[in-house]
Image (cartoon, rainbow, N blue to C red):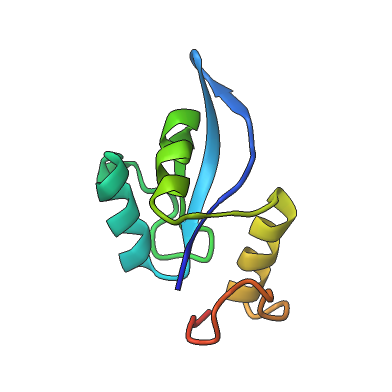
Length: 98
Protein backbone atom coordinates (compact mmCIF):
# COMPACT_ATOMS: atom_id res chain seq x y z
CA UNK A 1 0.00 0.00 0.00
CA UNK A 2 1.30 3.44 -0.86
CA UNK A 3 0.87 7.19 -0.96
CA UNK A 4 1.52 8.98 -4.26
CA UNK A 5 2.49 12.56 -5.15
CA UNK A 6 2.52 14.06 -8.61
CA UNK A 7 4.78 16.81 -10.01
CA UNK A 8 1.90 19.23 -10.61
CA UNK A 9 2.77 22.87 -10.11
CA UNK A 10 -0.49 24.72 -9.68
CA UNK A 11 -0.13 28.20 -8.20
CA UNK A 12 -2.13 29.02 -5.08
CA UNK A 13 -1.17 32.41 -3.73
CA UNK A 14 2.60 32.30 -3.35
CA UNK A 15 2.70 28.50 -3.15
CA UNK A 16 3.02 25.85 -5.82
CA UNK A 17 0.69 22.92 -5.19
CA UNK A 18 0.62 19.27 -6.21
CA UNK A 19 -1.68 16.33 -5.53
CA UNK A 20 -1.33 13.56 -2.95
CA UNK A 21 -3.39 10.34 -3.27
CA UNK A 22 -3.12 6.93 -1.61
CA UNK A 23 -4.28 3.35 -1.94
CA UNK A 24 -6.63 3.91 0.99
CA UNK A 25 -8.23 6.76 2.91
CA UNK A 26 -6.45 5.60 6.06
CA UNK A 27 -3.03 5.86 4.40
CA UNK A 28 -3.87 9.25 2.92
CA UNK A 29 -4.96 10.64 6.27
CA UNK A 30 -1.97 9.12 8.07
CA UNK A 31 0.44 10.83 5.66
CA UNK A 32 -1.45 14.11 5.97
CA UNK A 33 -1.05 13.87 9.74
CA UNK A 34 2.67 13.10 9.43
CA UNK A 35 3.40 16.07 7.17
CA UNK A 36 1.15 18.48 9.06
CA UNK A 37 -1.69 18.90 6.58
CA UNK A 38 -5.05 19.38 8.29
CA UNK A 39 -7.53 16.60 7.57
CA UNK A 40 -10.22 19.19 6.84
CA UNK A 41 -8.39 20.01 3.57
CA UNK A 42 -9.13 16.60 2.04
CA UNK A 43 -10.81 16.98 -1.32
CA UNK A 44 -13.54 14.80 -2.81
CA UNK A 45 -13.50 12.52 0.26
CA UNK A 46 -14.92 9.06 -0.29
CA UNK A 47 -14.72 9.22 -4.08
CA UNK A 48 -12.24 7.89 -6.60
CA UNK A 49 -10.86 11.45 -6.79
CA UNK A 50 -10.03 11.63 -3.04
CA UNK A 51 -6.81 13.62 -2.55
CA UNK A 52 -5.07 16.51 -0.88
CA UNK A 53 -3.57 19.49 -2.65
CA UNK A 54 -0.25 20.00 -0.90
CA UNK A 55 2.50 22.61 -1.12
CA UNK A 56 5.86 21.79 -2.66
CA UNK A 57 7.50 21.75 0.79
CA UNK A 58 4.95 19.19 2.04
CA UNK A 59 5.56 17.11 -1.10
CA UNK A 60 9.25 16.95 -0.17
CA UNK A 61 8.32 15.81 3.37
CA UNK A 62 5.91 13.17 2.04
CA UNK A 63 8.59 11.74 -0.26
CA UNK A 64 11.06 11.62 2.63
CA UNK A 65 8.44 9.62 4.56
CA UNK A 66 7.96 7.12 1.73
CA UNK A 67 5.48 8.65 -0.71
CA UNK A 68 6.02 7.51 -4.28
CA UNK A 69 6.62 10.12 -6.98
CA UNK A 70 4.35 9.46 -9.97
CA UNK A 71 3.47 11.38 -13.11
CA UNK A 72 0.25 13.28 -13.68
CA UNK A 73 -0.68 10.50 -16.12
CA UNK A 74 -0.14 7.93 -13.36
CA UNK A 75 -2.54 9.89 -11.12
CA UNK A 76 -5.11 9.69 -13.93
CA UNK A 77 -4.49 5.93 -14.21
CA UNK A 78 -5.14 5.54 -10.47
CA UNK A 79 -8.42 7.41 -10.81
CA UNK A 80 -9.55 5.32 -13.81
CA UNK A 81 -8.63 2.10 -11.99
CA UNK A 82 -10.60 3.18 -8.92
CA UNK A 83 -13.62 3.77 -11.18
CA UNK A 84 -13.28 0.28 -12.68
CA UNK A 85 -12.44 1.76 -16.07
CA UNK A 86 -8.84 0.68 -16.38
CA UNK A 87 -6.29 -1.92 -15.32
CA UNK A 88 -4.50 -1.73 -11.97
CA UNK A 89 -1.38 0.38 -12.55
CA UNK A 90 1.74 -1.74 -12.14
CA UNK A 91 3.11 0.45 -9.35
CA UNK A 92 0.06 -0.23 -7.11
CA UNK A 93 0.37 -3.18 -4.75
CA UNK A 94 -1.70 -6.31 -5.35
CA UNK A 95 -3.39 -5.83 -1.95
CA UNK A 96 -4.83 -2.42 -2.90
CA UNK A 97 -8.51 -2.34 -3.72
CA UNK A 98 -10.13 0.06 -6.18
